[in-house]
Image 1 (cartoon, rainbow, N blue to C red):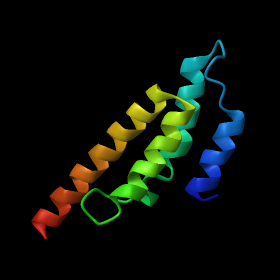
Image 2 (image 1 turned 90 degrees about the vertical axis):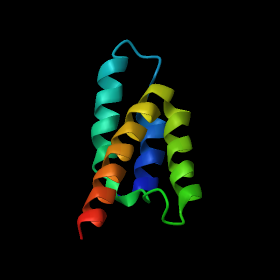
Image 3 (image 1 turned 60 degrees about the horizontal axis):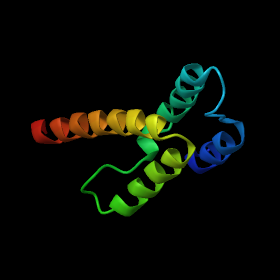
Image 4 (image 1 turned 120 degrees about the vertical axis):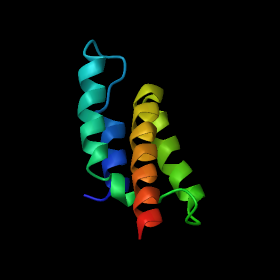
Length: 86
């Protein structure tokens, strides 16, 4: 399932007003992390696409988006470090 399909799926399945919000966020984040490498890295000419993805996740739940963005930022830093050593 491509990332766009996962986000559409989460739009129907994710219920931020449920009593198990922490578990909902954990489950959604675990699914999103599987597609992290599909999100363009910053500075590679696809910033708008990156922002679109993050805004779609934020529309589900802002806390989920902030955690996912932090994960993506960590991956971007690791990506840059690898490029610097090559």
